[in-house]
Length: 63
Image (cartoon, rainbow, N blue to C red; front, side):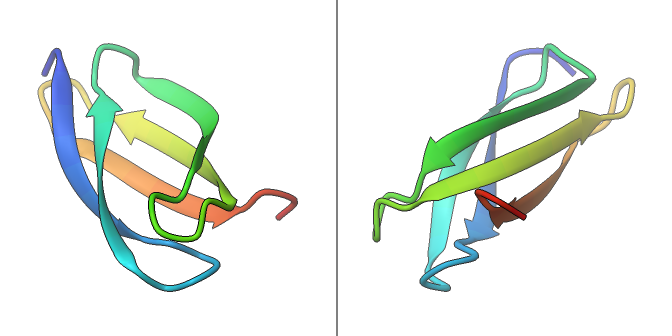
């Protein structure tokens, strides 16, 4: 799967469900993106299986 996929996650700080876009062109990636609600930094770990949808885990910035 190439391109972007929309994924719903729960912010590890405020608990709000937010929609994020995941880049599916890389199999493994880790990055930080601010929560759209509370503006705190969320650490994303993303893995994409060949031909599959992304698996996203989110953590506090220092976790």
